[in-house]
Image (cartoon, rainbow, N blue to C red):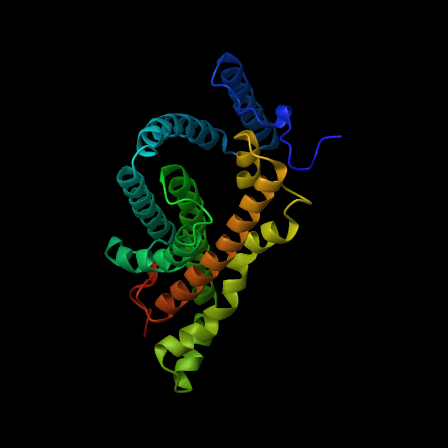
Length: 265
């Protein structure tokens, strides 16, 4: 019987970038498009565009990362690029004017920076290219998602409950206080996907960090340690980002473009 810490050979080999991988990728896209066509989902074009972009982007990024991993300075520069792209993406998804980008950047940084400082500064993950880039990518990507979901849900609530916001103003509350009363309950919904993933890890899914360590030749225990570190880091980072962005929305620092003429009052 193998000891618990012994790697299993069949689980430690990443897919090779050969013709077999290409054939499987094409087959998966065909399945997705056919399912959408038969089901009347109407997203066939979006699927083809998304798949094509993913292949090109990952090919380019793989080459860039391969070069960046050998240099601490280039690794940090790549992390900075990821942060900028995440901030632009979230600002666009919230439909806030580009001038408000710095506030969205603040919210994402509020979640990502403390988590990365704790993980990398403690030495749990080595402060080098192979350690910084994957962890930073996961944390920044998920705080971006938290910012997007928080902002979109908050403005959906303000739009649907604008009467409640105005009623709170009529009772003497300031605009930030009135808005926060309306949007505060939406924060939980923005955090639900991350909470569900953490709650069910190992029972429903084996997330990316776990699989990545296994494919990279690590043991099951190492994969589990990496995954729990990532999940709890994301839980903290997403909570910080959501909390900061809610306050920024309530104070009118981040305002959806179509509401700018009537919010905040």
